[in-house]
Length: 157
Image (tube, rainbow, N blue to C red; front, side, top):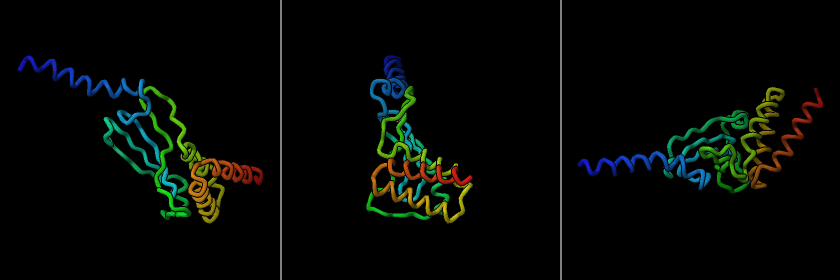
């Protein structure tokens, strides 16, 4: 039995240490990562973590967009609902550029102007953001749209 103790300790050490060390050589791998996703049908955000390729905790949160849509989903194009926004690994303060890389930031920007809007305006703008995400397949068109709305509301004040 005593001969097996060092082997067991080495295995335990590797199981704990490798998820910390491997991301430095193989960044953003599912050995140890945090993912942020956006649902482009309803604007909700999903935050999940993976350790050794296994899901380890997941939560879905409302964003200003999903709140403005009052729980409704809008499908403008036949496209899967969840899309990756960011992937983070230990020791890396940045994420690779995913197609919807700026979507959570866009939801936050919408949240900043939403107090200036009526409920109908909120819903219309949120629907347009979702439509742009779905029809263009990325976040770029929605960036221009949100910037134009922010400029419009700032200029009117």
